[in-house]
Image (cartoon, rainbow, N blue to C red):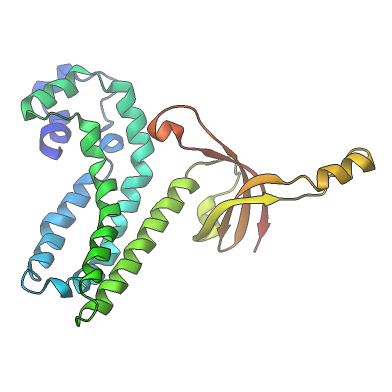
Length: 244
């Protein structure tokens, strides 16, 4: 993908096939896939190979590199932009020509999904290894590695929701780390209207999506989008916040 698609976007001989709107959009389409590739190629694969004879100890390898796995969060955050761009240009002659040269049966979007599938697969692999390594000396490390990977998956999932918040005036980064997010029933006082109406309204809960940051709780209204894939991803319109 990096050689047969990404590098080809900079190839002068292919320039005539790329529409002007697609030029200079390489970073949006591929995100930090190159960074993920180099991490695996130069670091993680070599580390894994050290455990070929002692697979039950592989948890240590994950723990040593856990910080690097956060590159997946960056990739997943960019994925909606990438998908949106792909949908606009999926029938482009440039992509068709790249696919033909590579002799790929699947189109580019199937390969752009691979890093997302990979990070979710690690926890399944670790769970499976743990099942057969209960009494081995590496069991604790495997359990810790599994917990850490699940933590990264949670952070990826949370950040995918967080980037869909709309209408918030301030800078979300200033609210500190996102600790939790989820959907809740919220009751509120209605200051306007007849007292009977107010009483009725007070007992009718509203569905709100809450984001708990270190410094504030954000109340948002979830809006489902119509469409496919990431187009279907909801957006959250900001309504209210409480400082923590």
